[in-house]
Length: 211
Image (tube, rainbow, N blue to C red):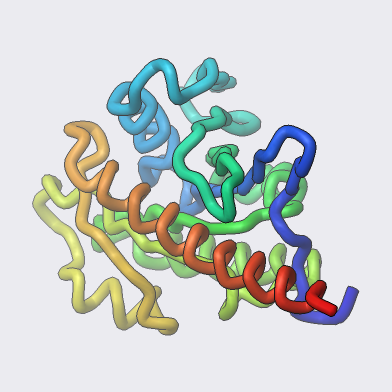
């Protein structure tokens, strides 16, 4: 594998199914688990699997949240999203690296509180480091940003957050995940970005197979 490459989503030609991995990351207590729980409750039961959550005593995600969702069809194949949230604490870096293996798209959930800007920056830098260790190119992966906790009093403006975190000018959304605000919009944008890239990759691959 060359530097900057990544694996294609898992394609099961027999079952006519493509599996894509979407990972929610960001600082601890920023709202990743809340996003997953809120999103899960919004989705039709027939389209999702069981939600698995492992929390510690202080309600932080210990390992990862996961569920699969059949969302769309591309080139006649059903697309399934495997959705994870990784723990944000520094001492779970090994876990984060493991979950990021094979990622197809990212949602970075930033804490809008002014006092947590340094935590957001540290988390984003950690993400870049872990992706580089997998030999993934951060600048090429589909990325959506969510600026969470917009209901709190001392928060950074979207412009301030974009200047600090959104160097690639990727799609971003304001949210209050505890109320469900901005959760679905973020998810839909993230899935659309993954599907757009997937469609292009499959089209290129198919063209390359032509005699």
